[in-house]
Length: 202
Length: 150
Image 1 (cartoon, rainbow over the protein chains, first blue to last red):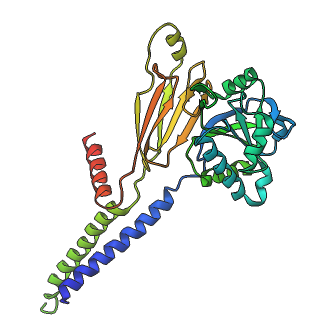
Image 2 (image 1 turned 90 degrees about the horizontal axis):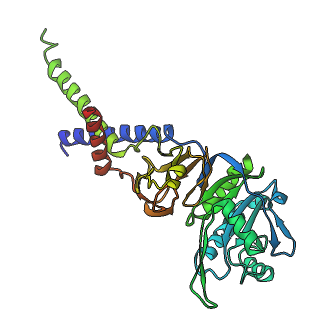
Image 3 (image 1 turned 90 degrees about the vertical axis):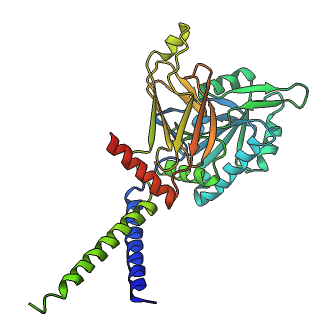
């Protein structure tokens, strides 16, 4: 290797080193402050209250879950893809919170009260996480709850195998009862675990 | 005097080496350093009176039909509702006076329900940010050129 080639290589190595250090420095300098990975509301409003029939036989009253992070989702047990995916993700996220799992409550409000009675919902949800609570009730009351959260639901098809097209976002309610965010469908458990930790910290 | 003469080419060489290191360092930095933006938020505002104008039959479009974002640059969609009525944006309702800040982490095309549009639909196309290497170098060059042109 001639001295000239060695010099060029040394220059190249020095340049790469300088660039790498500068890039690392900038990456740290531009690191964003921690914020929700879900869509976040500013200012947050009080989460609309509701009282529905719970899958565990008791009433599901949102206010009873103050002090916990509530993951509120709307769906139906005959859902083929979206709802099972969402519930499995929420179960993983809750498990990821470790010893703070008791401070996380998932509530699954049905958009299909015709088929989703309390007992059926209990069995369905237990397959994901026994702590999950299902909520059903009068169709008019359920429609009012959906409206308060901006959730849409529409029956598709006829006969026994109809489907429900519905909003697939998951609402994040903090321990003070504020509606802090809406996580679009498709985000993974790590995103939920991140946001749950932030909301538990206050 | 004779002892000083050989230093001139050495100095030139040292300056050339220094410039070469600086030049290559700058190029390598431009190609590798993460893209930065003062703010990654892309703000859209729903003006006051939107719902009233709609009720009067005015098919007002307050947001573009399609919003384009790039990861790492402007990947946080911010919707500010100045209207007196709530507006449904994809995942949820944005109440009057409220801001909804939605970060995107995956490049994809998203379709949302949105009552701020006359046809009730909003498309958000999220593209990947410029990758390290030639793509990032080209992006920096274009950014610099557009700044100079301004």
